[in-house]
Length: 316
Image 1 (cartoon, rainbow, N blue to C red):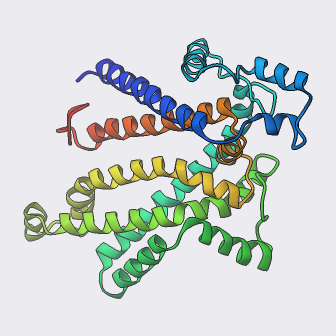
Image 2: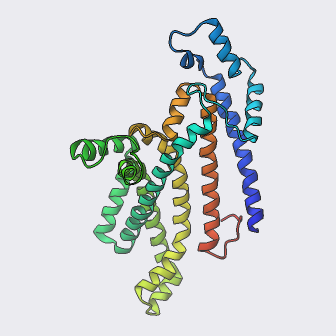
């Protein structure tokens, strides 16, 4: 499959996924009890005139399908709508927060790639007590929820030692990096453990293959055997898991951003759901779905670079 055909196919899949996701989410919000009017007008409510004005402004009395298709039409025109609660364009809300979420996921991905793959290689190649330690650490990492790790990191490194700030995203640059280290570590622990286990299993499987044993019998240097015959063939499952892991970080960021009080898309999504801010919930979820589909497309493209025998768009 050519690259244009691959991109066209993925774009069609993306549009279909977005339509189904938006319909399901919009329907669930529409059927949920309560009204966004209580957040707009306050706990005491407002006058009948105020209620009528806000209801007409945001079309809250329109039937479900009328509101949904009106929103879809605005979306195709590049208009994500206006927030009922914040009373500003949704695009501005997302634009001011997406940077924090992207930086958090990027830093967590770096930790997973370096530490997870590194520990997996160390355990599989060294063996013995080193392998046992790596396996134990990976098991503990997988068994501990992200929010528990987040609270523990805050207690030890922020409150106890005072090395890192307890919350917030910082003022930019190095200050933002310092603020995101603990959240990224909490977000990455479970995925790092899983990446280490997959890397270890993949390398051990490749070590037992016939072509590796032949290379050993020929007297090739261990470094060449590891680089050319083991790691290259083990990269397919490692890359697959890393790509899926990055996609799951998008969902995990919702929890971590609330634990560390980060002003990102995750915390915005939680507040919007609680306040039934339809436009914000829809837009944030669509952004997350687009990111998920794009990451999986990038992983498929990387397959062809790692192993030229795999054709673009084929089933592995």
